[in-house]
Length: 529
Picture 1 (cartoon, helix red, strand yellow):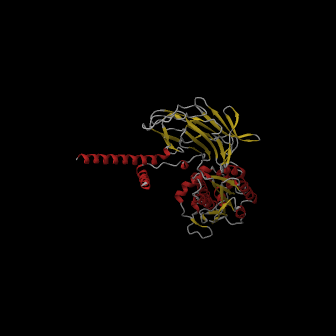
Picture 2 (spheres, rainbow, N blue to C red):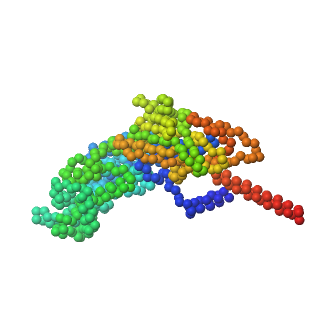
């Protein structure tokens, strides 16, 4: 019977209700969550602020797309970064998967490795000797495919490091070039190569890349692939010399497709980094192009390591204002933060830190040589709130959580169900919000202050049931809080988490009583007759 009721409930929900979005599905800029437990018999709720989000799996993907001409120095720096990351995650429950793509005229994919256990295999893949041709587009396509296929990892936890000298003149997964004509010493030829740029634009003529790529896009819509052919084969359709000045050549198309694929990964929400492989080359346009991809920023492997490992930098803080407002019957409700130090604490990964008293309404967690790693400042005035401050960076690979207790100080006595329970705020309920506002003030891993972000609003509820008139009322205990004392309550709270079970038995009891009354009436009529 219970299974039947549950199935009917699910059926009705699917067909007559909009399925709510999960909090974990919201595309936060900074991963975070706020959850609250249902009110207990003392009208208390335990609230958890978490960075990253409490439900987030601590798994990250890092894909390296390396030009075959990448210098040994860069390869060593890549390996050093991965060794440092391995050390950082070794004491956590986090996991980092590493993908290696090395491209020449095509992409050579070495699949996924577990950073913790496969560092030697990663090293072999990075130092693999490969020659012949440069096809940046193929390398990025392969890197994107690796990241796209891993559906278990959120986009914001995917990283792609692209290392090249930018000297590219092939495109597509199978090396493709354009049969573009040029004249050299009176001879008309059409072979592809990096010198196609100089033959068309001149060696020192560096473009405004935005305008250049817009022009290529417009011409590509007209030219299409009519002059394309596989590298190494004989072209069947060669662009006439008189069209070559305005027509797109192999370098034009290779650069355009490289930017398009790179941008597509960024649009997916992946973290993308572009690094010049070997410093200045004999092709100034190629160096300029790589600087364009990186937006002129010089990114070191240390920067990338920090961006992968750290979610937020020190100086980040959270403002949390205690909940108050009107319930679903129009009654005032008010939550207080319980300042008893046994009622709040911090978790960093598996390590628990209890608060240490610094001064009135000021507490510290995890005392270190230079002070406390985290602090809490409590403000009990009209807009009761606290500030939770991070004095150390927050890692992507360990949940940093503040767990505290709220007290509902003015529960109602009249029978009824007050509020609605929503553990993490994803249902966007109005009743009995645990906070009026909770704001993250983030600083990223590059020490840049970001725009503030709001947490969702968890809501709680309670039910008051009238006392049975045939039984003497039991005097209720006064609810004790560390901030205020509430009026003694003579009614019985029931957690709404058991609503289905309670309502089922009430319905069954009502049916039984109705049946009994009908039997008694029938019996009485029979005797009179």
